[in-house]
Length: 124
Image: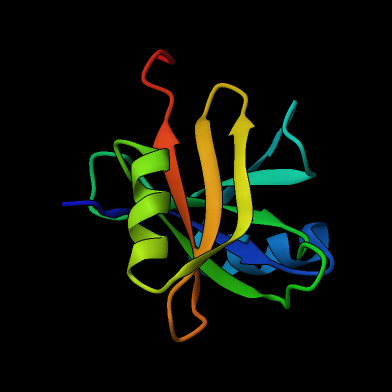
């Protein structure tokens, strides 16, 4: 079974909203260098406790502020094929994220957007 492993929060001013999440929830932010977009990694707690970590960035073109979940899959290409066969579509094509894996964004038949990621198993 594939699980949600990451969330992203989209905001027009990522640096301005960080104090809110830091003060309210105690989250930590670290700028991710070397990616295709300006991005902050969000640590929400100890990895030994239930929960997931995420990211904070600006909305992409045509996207509104909000939250998006990313689901880990063993094969991005197979998942893309299954999504399309089930009536969904790929709204952002497959891209490589250095030291992270292969990522794409999809829509279900109702228009809900989510990410799918094939983690890079060579990264330790």
